[in-house]
Image 1 (cartoon, rainbow, N blue to C red):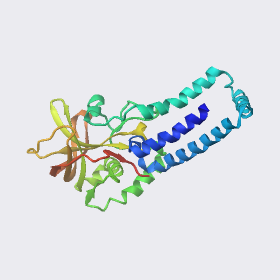
Image 2: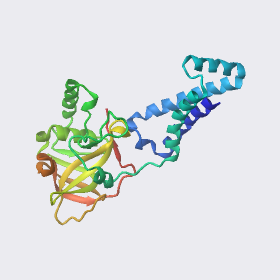
Image 3: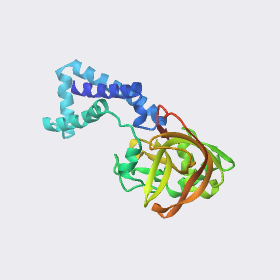
Image 4: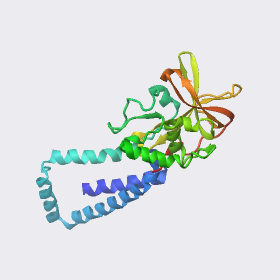
Length: 278
């Protein structure tokens, strides 16, 4: 009966995340089909366990015998396994998701291209500024992917960045900055003001998810905003301008930047995340 409850709990959790709209804060929305697959398998296995339980003691003895074969004959061993299976259900149902804003950046700071800090999966790194998908490919395959992607934009003199192409365009700009210098660009993001060595730098960011929340990060460009524009952290802007390369003293290097010609305040989108399409 416990197995039925756990499996049905996973089905209900996936359903809850889908209906509540919280799913897109955990995984790349392009992988939504995996959630439906998980829901289907959880429901199927839950029904199988319910049938075994309902069939009576004979089936229970058979299940317990199988548990012995796998080294889980003792109650505390089964208890540990059940506890580990229940933990994600408790976290998913009871713990609220956190709205990301500039306080995350302020607390961690940011580095380029990726930080040394890890979140979630210890093999993954919190990413900043540049979305880096190279960790999912070998070097040659990654270069091929970037070359193919570059062909979509290399002839465009104006880049209109949307929710759908945000991460791929940002990755290309950081990989091939000289190819984008002089091009016009327009995009939305929230303001983050960095103060380093008595120098102020303004960035326009979006929080993005490459595969799942373990490889999420804050991505965007340094901006040179009009002097008469009053902004503060977390305000959302739509900007239009020209891509340049500017020296960012804390990194001791040039990084892509936007000389903003036009900026206007906009409302934050309902879903503030952007996702990498593969």
